[in-house]
Image (cartoon, rainbow, N blue to C red):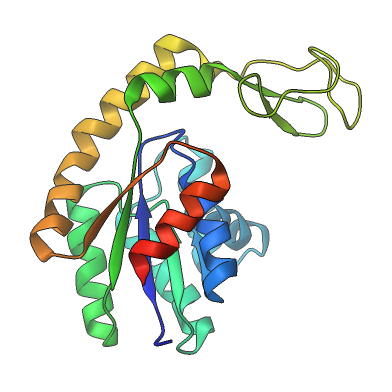
Length: 215
């Protein structure tokens, strides 16, 4: 199979991170999560990591140019291996800048997977999420319940609701996503490489559907 260059986009709570990991494993390509790339660069105190850290410490967003440099550095390490990028682009200027950077490298995006989920399903899914403040395990009252109600299976700590998982916050995040990402979806739709995938059903069913549309 030719090297695949994939993007995965979708609203918060659509399960895109989970699917990106599974698809990368199935296809033997690298999962590039911008969150992980950022954390790793900061932890290793690389030149770009230190620059990013100074923005993060001020509570500012890491500038697009810097994020692109970090992504380009990761692509250099892959030596031609395929990849699936998760967490970027979120805005139209980011999508255009990513396109330009890849073009300069002689690379392009084969397919953009859009994980499509009904907003009400997402609200229910995210407000059902519970996390362990002690060991960071994640549960869901709909799909992945703890064995003992309200307690972490691993360490027994009391589970909590994250501040960004309240209904009001979730609805606000969805609104922001819609405003920012709708133009990104349109951008790739016009390029002809957007592939919508229904993000409802079991994790396995969604992965199977993604692999089917990539055939």
